[in-house]
Length: 373
Image 1 (cartoon, helix red, strand yellow):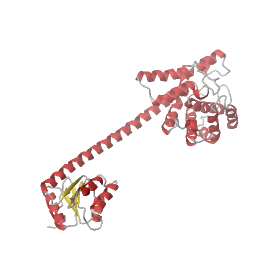
Image 2: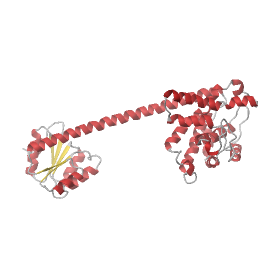
Image 3: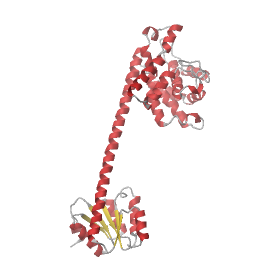
Image 4: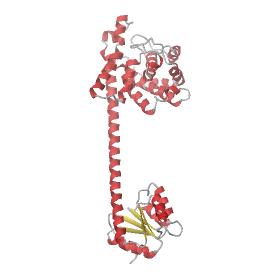
């Protein structure tokens, strides 16, 4: 009977590799009797070709063959991601312990010596097919779980983004002259942070903090910096003239109001969230100054969180170049001069240097998110 006529439609396909026709016929008949689908190869080259064309569920592999021997076939199979997970059982006349050790070390699932015992071969074939089926099912389940986790993570991220934008937009409606302020400052902060990250030799003090993940969180948190303004009365928030000292004290409270709102929300969950870490820092401390003359805590130098230092530059630049109820817009050049003059007193010197290096990108961001007339 031709060898191809032994192929049957079954759930498992076994590739038998041996250079002796009698051995191939013996194994093909034995396995086909058990309703396995059998494919055969007379040498190593053909075995690799068949395995890559249509991956079998298991391979019975002779070692001593002309050309590519069984060891080389096994090594090639395990080195190829497409065939690495196929169980390989060596079926060989090599009976030395060293030979078996070498085969198993290459990743073979089992090692059977000739002359074979049909019941033992069939039992081991069944065992390894069951193990492979279980392993395949586990991988598929893990892949489904990973896909679901990724989907839910994306969904949570989008929910966070939408929530932040909604809250920030609510605060923005109280101050209708700020327009796209939250979007511009969000991108300014990201631009500065990426520049610091990309130049670790010049700014080594930021290397540990400004990871890709942290920059993403900074970008998402930045729009919340002024949410405390929701609690500022209109007579102060929208006053066209200069605030009185008493009114300014009320205005300054927007930092603590926003921070307390976020802190209360977080405490209600009973755990600290990475997502709110930078939001709390930015909301409370973005009005602090490098020389300690800012508010609400009068922090100075590196005691001011990096996130707040980034926002300070972004916030002031945007306020300068845009019209406010209390002032006309300044030119970009004027804003640059003011920020440069604030180096070392209002702003972290390193962040001013970074700002000067990327100021053209700030201009592009401002143009992209310009306020409507």
